[in-house]
Image (cartoon, rainbow over all chains, first blue to last red; front, side, top):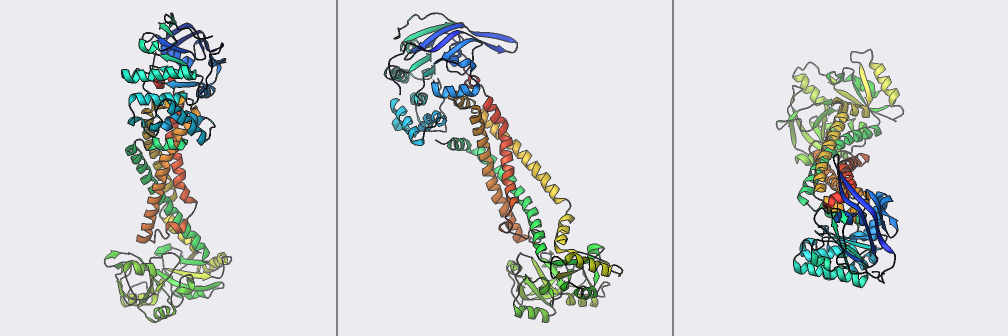
Length: 240
Length: 385
């Protein structure tokens, strides 16, 4: 895990980004001229009503989608110009995903799920094992590594998903409603864990959420309204 | 974690569906193995026949014609011929069963000179030569029917109006199961004379052994030239050509078999493709997650294709075993059509099943794999913010 103080250069820059989806002959604008910067060690929550473009913006930051216009730069790399293959490779190095429904592979154990992103690297079996064990220890599930997802609770599944997200030590963690499917206790544990990843390991996190309590754990919160970034009413200043 | 482990877990994720797909592939490829095994056995028969420098002399009219017994001596006396015997198919019933094994009337004094690769003890050969009603039996046939030397074998004539009352005087060993018994041509002919049968003094075919393969064409020509102007002109050929003739008599078997094989492969591809497509539909989100964390299109494509290949490969292994078991059983039951055990005809034909399985795996997995590879991650995750 990398650690260190936040750097002065933004690791994510969203510059005049607009995104439209086409349905038949119709063009549906989802994001409109969005500008955003994230710095190393940032923890940003994205809030807004359904259909406001939160997940679309998250997908653009994570290199899952391309803007219709504008630029998304992550670590100086313009994601809009990368080929499909290069983008996949880039994601494997730079992005860790945390989904609302965990999205673990049901036929793989917790260990194997966490190991999955490492199979794309040139690490040896022994090195992979070390990385996976460390990641599972960080999320407090080292003793459950041989369990299949069906043998874990929702909160435990999400923790395995977080371990999978951090095992490659990515530049950016993106979380889409990470507590949306959990009870309050488990949600609290997941938020604690994410906060610890941010504070102890300086992980840069972008989290989409509807939950104000979850958003309150982030250092900054931005709101999207009809595809427009409106304000940062409860911004917690990040170190520059 | 190796990629294969993930592929294997996906194969076994819905074990009922996978087992049914594997079984359908297995049974169908088992049938294909059997059909290709049949072709291989015919080819093997031809190869074996080529080794033996034997010539088969028939009436130019084919099996409907006969050859005067005097022709045997004529052939025997020709240059290049080492030995010759009459060889007539009797085709009788045994225990009211229609031709349960092959029965040939021949010359006990010469027959083991024409088939020197067949072996029999001196005592039994002597008894065969001396006992007019004696017969010798392929040792595997002896075991199959539970006979022993001294047993009587009554055969009821179907083509010939004379019933045989044979006594087993010995058993011979042969490289392949001939499923046949040999008895004295004289015994049959004398019996037919007693019944005033019109066409006595004839043999269905003459088998002759020549010194080397090189002289066979010349001897064949000399025999046919010799009988060209006789009442019974001949059509002579090598034993290999004679064996091939039987295959040809079944029609264009190879084309039939290849057509069946193509139909089997095509329909199996559809069955397996359907199974793979169902499996993929259930895993759209999972595939989207794989792509999100960095799995390339090629890797996703390879994994899905690998999955279908594993299914069809297992099916091919089962099918190959089933096919070989059928061939083994048929070799025991009807060796005249399946003269070789699978172990006796190991060859490239055995790969056909696996090549077909690879084809089925590729064809059936290709469309689901391409769809998975081209899946949009955003669509796969089914989330719109």
